Image (cartoon, rainbow, N blue to C red; front, side, top):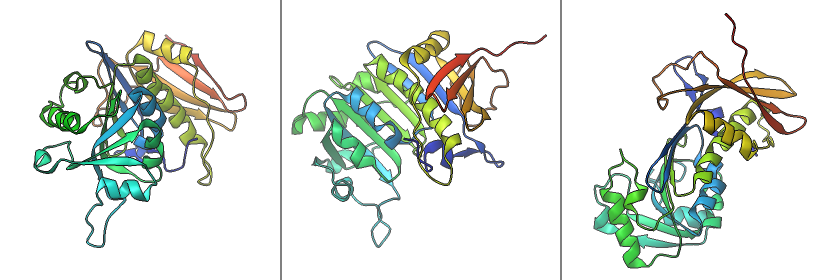
Length: 284
């Protein structure tokens, strides 16, 4: 389900408010994969992240303007969880988190199937979470906090978190970083981005729209051709939506111009709810 307030709908580029592009960059490390991507809200990826987490999710940082008290002070994560009807445990970090970027003073520990409900209906402008295979004890949570707090975030974080299977960091509820031991989960981010971008063009009168996701072989084909893609909306009609895809050598950054060359076109058949890839004809 693609909603009218999704990341592609509410974000834009430049003073001319150009539509926000899809960007996807994949890297491989020692036993893990890293994705940098736009544009997706945490809630739009909740099921993908839950699958990658395997069992338990630990929310290590939350910042939002969606929940403020009378003095405009953000609610604590545990209060947000109560308002969302989320069953979870709270772990206080206290001084351990003081002055540490990317680490809040309270961690939430929840089953992976609680994540979608926790994120439903609000927007975190900063969110970081970890996927662990089992329910961690207090000592393990303190160790996790220490590892996150001392990690260099210009490098992969997951290798510094022993036993963890997922690291997610979201900024402005638009920019995505996913680190996972599961390659399939990382590729699923690309499929979800295609779905969200096509859906943003089909939303009418603020009514959510169902858009089928591309099949795994289509996503595999794209990744086999390039580990980095930029995508923009092409022709849009009642029957079809096209996404123009450009393979790039470097990850896309906000200040960079969008490429003019189109290497692949992903076409969503609205009636048949299917995707296909085409290769643009070259002239000259």
